[in-house]
Image (cartoon, rainbow, N blue to C red):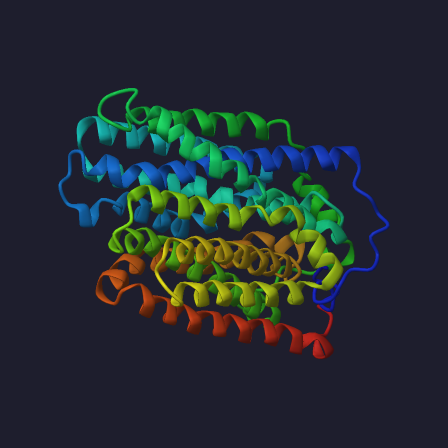
Length: 419
């Protein structure tokens, strides 16, 4: 599965004789721990921001603006973060991300303590750099292992989100009233968690910039292609499209579901329970998604992801009982995992090592700009249209994802090696 062999990654891998050594296992474990802790910060941001803002800023419609600013921050920072890592390496680059995380959380503390909404929005924008780095953990995982283990490595590191689903909400519950104003201690805890990530990163052995360059052999001697040339590859277009639709649809339904649940007369606790099941559905499959990709092929697993997301929508459209919301969001999460992990695996086969920074940055810019738009529009459309029409719109998005997956399968006989 690499840029030298475009046929790879579309079918099951048969040569898995090369095993991972102890160092690779250790590096992946530590990176998964960073994913768990870093994703916990993101979960805490979502859980605490709206509730903390309304304690002093009485505009509920703008309460989640700092979170939106974090999404915008990801879009702004993703290219600088990726290009910095291309130049100085993953270790330094990720630790710079942790420093931004500590700084952003400190600004959030200051904004909350002084009751300054604008300062909290600036804090969200700064935190966007840390989140941009967090999303690159999956690409770093692929660089820590031999080619045929990329799918497994991406899947294992993504599985750190399972721990985040427990750690983040638990810390919020414990810290929300430890200091005044409410949630001040929660943002202080985010500073501590980013410090933990900074420390763990010091113990991960990433390939050096020179080693990464030399590993490409003759291909690396060729100058990097222009970004438009990388982005115009059919595989890159289809893979990025699949990732965008997977993350966009998931964010769309996840953001709207609490409003729909409460709107149906259920308590807030039911919304929390549904989101918890959804997050578990997103990350628990990561323990075996890589094995499924190696056994059945990337596009096959991605197709299952589309089918599962459509099945989740079908359950949501069949009624508004508690079990409809629970099953729909849980199945949606599993489908997202299959589709997104598969898309990420294929994106890593579209560029050479000396092109990775700009190629990964473009992919994440596309994916997370879609996420920002989806999360922003979800509340608006839920309020204007309602839950059922919103799910019918999701059917159209998933049909577009199905077209992207079919396009990937159709390419297999006509792909030519990168020269």
